[in-house]
Length: 81
Picture 1: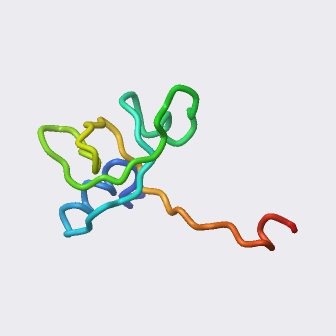
Picture 2 (picture 1 turned 45 degrees about the horizontal axis):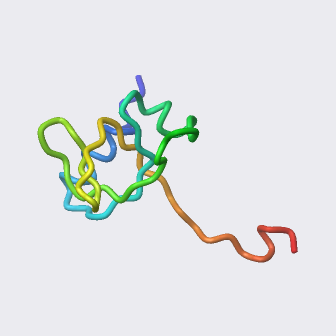
């Protein structure tokens, strides 16, 4: 049985643990859509808290799903230059 936290559940746990400004892929339909459907989707937001069943980002917009992601700048080597 796999009981590891993922997706929006992980974001909620991170917020409860005191984490702030969590970069997330966001959507209002599902975790899967948040990380795969980027057309007509804001895609990323920094989540600052969870209230009334919604993840709230730094500009105050509410999201139903917020999957934590890692944003790392590419290096010249990553870009193959």
